[in-house]
Length: 258
Ligand SMILES: NC(=O)c1ccc[n+]([C@@H]2O[C@H](COP(=O)([O-])OP(=O)(O)OC[C@H]3O[C@@H](n4cnc5c(N)ncnc54)[C@H](OP(=O)(O)O)[C@@H]3O)[C@@H](O)[C@H]2O)c1
Image (tube, rainbow, N blue to C red; front, top):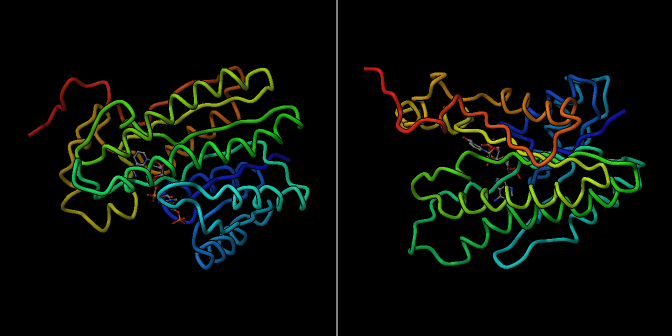
């Protein structure tokens, strides 16, 4: 049976990705930084999907401003080895959104934290996963990226830079890992409805990304379906980007119907 590892999957989009893979009969390992939240999510998922194995793994220390915690990643994969669990698909969903970082105002360490989380920590996760994939005949890596890798939004320099860098990393990894039958691809969502949406209705009811050709933003399930496509269907696809933004990125300017 296939097993997927999904990062940052106690809330929002990560939950939809867990639910998609589990409902398709895959075993799921997921991570989160809060032990209690991971424990509760694991229990809920196990009740919801009794036919598959679901393991929540708290990975409390990811990064500090100057480095990442590779030991914690190594311990995660050693733990999975000890249980005989092979991760054939890695979905890198967790991200530092880099909110509140103003150009030229914040300490440089804020910028470094976002790059470290979204690029270096993800690279480290790939390294440990791919070592096992190579030994087991191949695998899949899926980055949950963002259309902000291409199109900037205000006050998100670190986030946009990290997502653009992540795409470069994705393509270079796809090139190097094809010979091991490891496919590496990215989903590029636009705005996704999350709990932030409910908490800030005034902001989200007026964000420009509502004005897309398809007229609305994505829900977690749309992103999960795209990740599932790469994992289960796109057998001859690597280094690819699948944009899930209702057509937002193709516009020269948003069409606002009065
Ligand atoms: N929401 C959007 O509108 C949108 C748009 C485009 C792309 N995306 C991308 O889609 C993915 C999911 O988005 P989302 O909005 O559902 O994510 P989210 O709710 O902001 O965060 C997802 C998970 O990432 C983990 N996380 C948050 N900050 C972190 C940090 N500093 N270091 C490590 N882990 C951290 C959290 O897990 P724990 O707190 O449990 O550790 C959280 O549950 C992300 O990669 C995001 O960049 C989102």
